[in-house]
Length: 343
Image 1 (cartoon, rainbow, N blue to C red):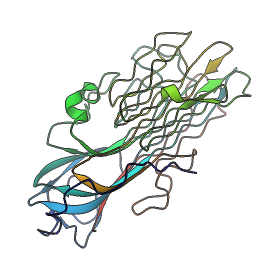
Image 2 (cartoon, rainbow, N blue to C red):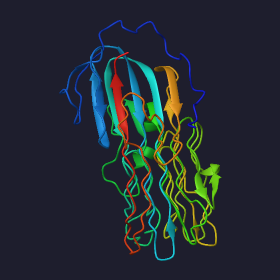
Image 3 (cartoon, helix red, strand yellow):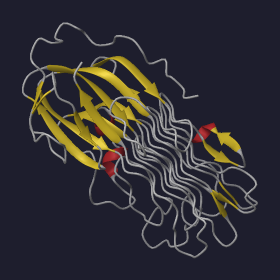
Image 4 (tube, one colour):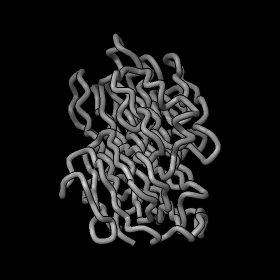
């Protein structure tokens, strides 16, 4: 059963609600209805991974719902069994926002043999260029969210860096976040679950390692997933909103992006490459009210399934693959969603 956070209640002042018509202009991205909306009567949905923006010419109140992306599924190799990625989380609240420009991130689903950080801070299982032997496990999904200000959230240069996700300045701009799912891991023998953990929710869920949940790999409201042992190579730490990774030839699944990101799970001896932990969600204590945040609960049960704005398949964890060649062929996780609607 999905975990319902205790982050509920009326946090924001109600005095400005409906004081002005909730007009929204300057909408970027591929959305139906053009670039101007009246949020008293119209809804807006962004469902393609990317960074977008909108402008409020006057203060406005409306409901926002965000759905995190799923982690990628791992590949079954010549000696290894692959496991699915974790699903994304969900957060919703009534936003009371002053006039200004705001940024949106729609999280990107986790993939495989790439060193690029996905949109929304999910790390790759292959953390840097030149590494070609992390072909079994998978990258993590990115968070989806809404931010104050006009500055860039996603560094489009890609690579293992994307330092914007590692800065407190970007994290402090968060209004509403849903965490991304962790990447699937792998294991020789295939008798124990090494699936990716799910995005949050007030916390993500830990990735699986030898059939047990490694809660130390999940992001919470106050900290990233911890650095977890890896006998094969260097571990890349989770930093603020940016997920961690098992490192060079580590094979373990990567950590999902979030308000605080997930890390890789424990990867010890015996051919164990654990799934990555999920990142956490977030609800701003004064700009949002009546908030609910829910973690994913299964590969095809992301947080917020059936809620307004949800699109079937979004936020799913990627399937594991039965391909046995030496290039990663696991399934890509489902992308996230950001949905704005009238009260």
